[in-house]
Each structure stands twice: as C-alpha cells, then as structure tokens.
Image 1 (tube, rainbow, N blue to C red):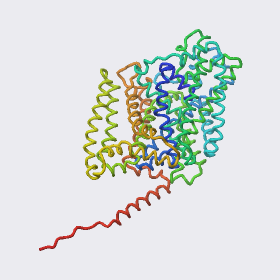
Image 2 (image 1 turned 120 degrees about the vertical axis):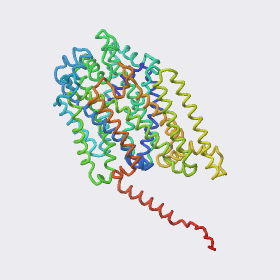
Image 3 (image 1 turned 90 degrees about the horizontal axis):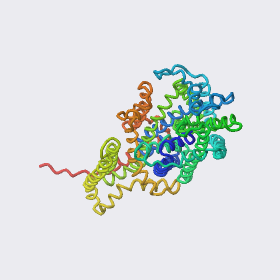
Length: 605
C-alpha cells in the first residue's frame, strides 16, 4: 500500500521533488544500514529478532520483542485495509455510477468512507456504533488468505510472493503506460516531481522524520521481518548485497508508482477543469477516491477499477504475511511452542488477530486505523534507535570495559546520547536562535565529555603503560564496532567498515533527534499544542489514549527486558538456554579453579 499511495502523496505534500532529498538521504543513511543489520543478525544467529539481540546481550531481548510487537500492531490494521479493499473490489462488480464514475475524486472518497468503511453512522461523539458486516466478512477472508500463505512455511511464502509481488509489478507498468498517454498527464507529473519547494525542508521539519518513517514502512525494517527472513537464509548468503538490492528495488517501485498515479491525476484535473491541489491526493483519498475515478473514465473503465483493487489486495496480502512471519518466527523459536507445528501456531495467531481487528471494521474503524498509523511512527523511530544502539554500542562492550574501565565507556555512550537529545530539544522547541543554541550544546557537550573521557582513561593507561592515549581512544570509538564487522564478515561475507561506523556513530543520535523532532511537532490548527496526544482532532478517549498506550507499551516492554533480563527467558529456545547455562558454568569453574595465593601470616609474639 505504502509504495502506491503513501509515497506519492507525501511527495506532493512536502514540496514535490524536494521530498526526494530527505527520502534519498533516509534511504542511504538510515534504511539500507538498518536493513543490512537486520538481515545479518538473522543469518548470523539463525533466530528471530528477540533471539538475535539476546545473543548480543540478554538485556536486549526486549528490543526484539518491541520490534515484533510493532509489526504486529501494523498487521492487525493492515488486514482491515485489505478488508476495505475486498469490499471495494466486490462493489466494483455493480454499477459504478455514483461510486467511482460520474463523480469527483472527493465525492468518490466520501462514498468510500461512508459506504465501504461505513463511517456514515458515526455521530459527533466519534464513537463506534456498529460492526460493518461486509467488512467483517472481508476481514475473515483476508486472515484466511494470510493463514494459507504462512502456514506452509517460508518456501510456500516464496512461491506465493511470485504472484503477490510479480503481478502487481506487471500491473503497475500497465497503469503507468496507460496513465502517461492521457491528456493532462504532464501537469500531474510536474506536480509530482517537476516542482521543488525547498522551503519545506526548513519550514516543515517533520518532513525529515516522515521520510525516515516512509523508508521504514516500505522496506520493512523495525518490524522484525527482515531478521526473520534472514534466519531462514543460508548463514553465508551475501547479506549486504541482498539488502542493497531489496532497498533499491523497493524505492524504484515507489518512484514509478508516483508517475502512474500523478499522470492520472493530471488527466482528472483536466476533465474536471480544476487544479490538482483541489483533488483528493492525500493517503487513502488517492487510492480509493481520485485514482479509481481516473480509471473509470477510460474505455472499459470498470475493469481498470477492478484491476486497481486487485493490485492493492495482493500488495496488502504480501505485506501482511511478511509482518506476521516476524511474530511467527519468534514464537516458533520459543521453548514453549517449538514442539508445535507452524500451521497450528499460525492458525491461533490469525484467529486472535481477526478478533483484535474487529475494532477496525466498526463504523469508526478508519478513525482508529488513522490514529494507530500515526503513533506507529514513534515506535518505528524508537525501535530503529534501539536496534542501532544495541548493535553499535552494546556489542563487545564487555571487552571495552575490561580493557578501558567502565568510566570512559559509560561516559562516551550515554554522554553522546544526552548531548544530541538536549540539542534536539533546543532545535525543535525554542522560538529564537534555536539552531545556534542547539549547536552550542553539541559543541560544549563534546568538549566537556572529551575532557572527562581523557581523565577517566588515565587509569587504563596506568595499568597498560605500553599503550598510548591515542590507541585507547581508538579502541573506545572504533574497537567494538570494527570487531562486529570482522566477526559478522566471517559468516555473511564482506561488510564495509563504513557500515559499522553508521550503525554506531550516525544512526543512534540521528534517530533520537528525529524522534524528538516528531514528538515536538505541533497541530496545524493550534500551534501551541503538540501533535502527540492531539493528533487529527480526535477525542482523547478512546483515540489519543489508545495511540499513546501503544507507544507506552512498547517502551515498557523494552525497559522490562533491561531491568529484568530473565523476563523473556520463557521465549528463548531450550537449546540456546542450555548452551548459555553451560557457558556460565564453565566460567564459574574456571574462576573457582584459579589458585589464589594467600598472604603469609606473621607469627604471633
């Protein structure tokens, strides 16, 4: 879904071609490095997200649980989107007049919301009043399709993907070829990429967080998907090359989809004698409003509309079973469930997901979907930070502490995060001289931290007089991350050192800054109110509270894993736990076997 409607509408919203600047930077600096990390962890440890991060440090198991929970939150409402699509597909077999034919894009979208979603019965209190039975049936069909896709295993999913991804790619180029030949298409393409409003990059700072979120959505990182699929690959598969191919192919699909959609919108604007900004071009209004209207005006328009909804259904199913696979991999890895067949676990999970998804097929379901979709952005940024922090800073930290002492390692780790967090608060919350003050915080913070680190390293230098201060600093800044690159490269093939540097020194502070940026965004109507807790004009209960609860739950899951590292021990495979216990016993035996010389006692007078 995101590649067809979310990406083009975001490009139009954020300055046309100007959006490609933060998008491409997000892809190269954030998306690809995180995608490489997730695939590598899956291949190296041959486990899902929880097991992989637990292998780095048992206190990081919560990262894996949060990422899988993040993906599960999404797949539950994704299935509702699939249900809406199935309902719309069924409606396209009746007369299109008054639905997507003979109406404007806005009128078509109103029909979608009022009849397909069923929101016409929602009152001024915004509370749900009924289940929309057509969407309940469609939701059951959607989860049945997901079940049959995942129950047969990863190989079965691979065969299904040839259809669910292959056919939409073919249809996209069919839509593209038809759209660009329509009169007015040039105006639509100009609105998509021909206009560059660079002012949005500074006047709408949330564009940077939005670009990163779009990358996360489209390539599937921070959901546990890629770690799960990586765990099913051969350990020595070329992880870096595969990740780059996946990311670039995905972005190319998004880019081409934008041409197909906006060429059609240019045609619609021409026949309605209006401008593109007057059409429904935001999010679902694009796919379920304006674009079906465009297709309905073509010869054989009813068939074009059906093909559109069929394409959306297949893309949705493809995303849904990938998201569910992340949760299934973690559950199947646990000692409590690893003796059960995958189809049985899949059946239970799909039935539970259907029950949870009933909220989204009430007449107010689209409101719940919109709210959760917004708050998921915070979770994605948070999980992305945790993944990069866990791999970049915690991997090999025991060795660093042993060689350098705890003080410089802890100072550098938490000092770096505190400096960038304080700077971000200044940048996005101060009204005057925000940029200057923020950079002064960065400069002053690094100077103070550097002095304290040099002082704390004096103990390590005293214990190792042959080592220079420069070598100690090198180990502090680069030692663990270069060790990680070398260790993983022995298994998955070459991993460039610059990738490791991005994982440690770029992604954690950058994602922290973007998280604070998004949390500091204001509502469009009342600039004195933060968007967090006031999104979309929805009432506090149940909408805002539900969204905030989802974010708070994610944070709590991670904190529990840090404070109580054995809290998720029941999810660890039995053989992994046994191995860990054997290693601990071995260490204890070695410690006890050390012959410690006792001081001689002096003779008593």
